Image 1 (cartoon, rainbow, N blue to C red):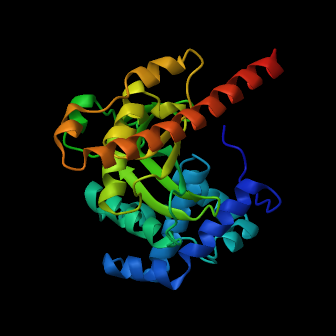
Image 2: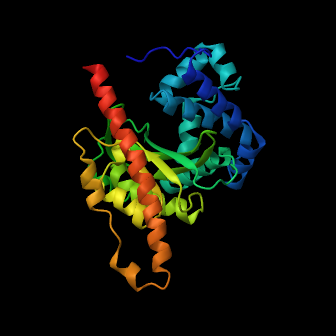
Image 3: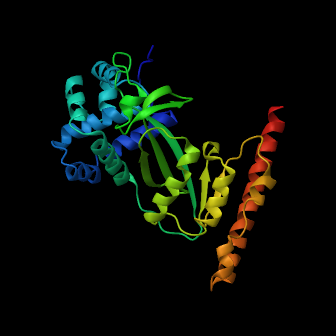
Length: 299
């Protein structure tokens, strides 16, 4: 049974959603809609805010519409005095192909991301979240073979259970907490398998540079990802280690590639590698201490 959606601006969750809603009414977001040919912008904006509200509370669009019709405070919160009908919302969504809808939402989300001043060796936080689609899977059965040509897939998360949808990666600058980018991944792949895809995308967009420290949660954990982060992407990958993690195992797999010795700038590359490895060891030891302290306090 769904719980009532009652606005409470004293809660951090509602404060965050309120900031997102405010941004969707901005000129920048309206321009992003116009670029994608989404007209009229006013009605499209109301539908987008309803979709965000649905995703934010992981509930069906139909239930969100019913709550909006009942609660004037909720309508005021999303800046929409008139609520589009459920058929209008579904017609709006169905007017896009899966790929078009992904690019449309990605364009809107990235238009919200402000540019932060480029600092040397800055810290970046990366977090992933599931995006569920309201496809009424109870009435219509979706088999794996039916989804081979679709961008969405069956996935599983501790929050949503089994769901049809996508995976979203949010890239945030620390300590300013300014969003730098939003990446949407077709299907629902495991976070550890997305590690390379995310870094490739951030490198190509010049969001990350050599020496940056990137913080991931334990879903991205893999000893190989530590190695790739330092050797290939020249970053300090801080992935929250699991309880059975052995710090020596991470170090043993990180060594100079043989190609370094044949390069004319081999000494410079080795020096950069040593600096990255020293920072990596220092940071990882702090995380191990944090885990041990947490276990001691909980015992």
